[in-house]
Length: 165
Image 1: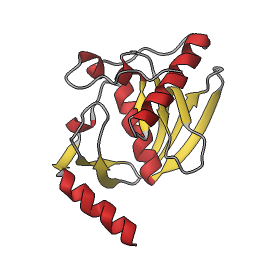
Image 2: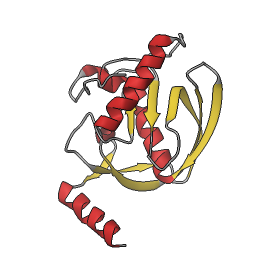
Image 3: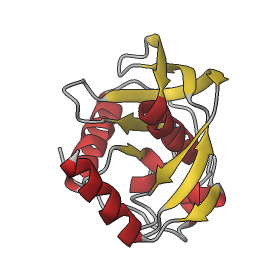
């Protein structure tokens, strides 16, 4: 496993639609492992292959709550419900935070490392993180969806409030 360099905006790969994965091989395994290590090193909750310069439909989300990371290969959103607005940031756009509206509940189907398909339902923050990463695979960056830019000082206030609750 290796920590890869994170591609930052305005790199054009971040705005390209990624190609589907067709080979479920050792190269894919290495990419998934490297993505996970890179995400942890950068203190992220999700990362997509184009963020490390690979234009494939591969992404990972890990909320770090004792659950296994969600590896998504060739993910497709099959259903959404509700809406919520919350603050997002992105490893590929350091220092920018903003309020983004996304569905509250999602249903997706995606493939595992071995190519087998699975379905997943998620809500709230998990759904938001999954959709953020799927957007990366479609060449969509969160800054195009920002309703209101959030000053980093507002994040510090939110974190302090959480610590006292």
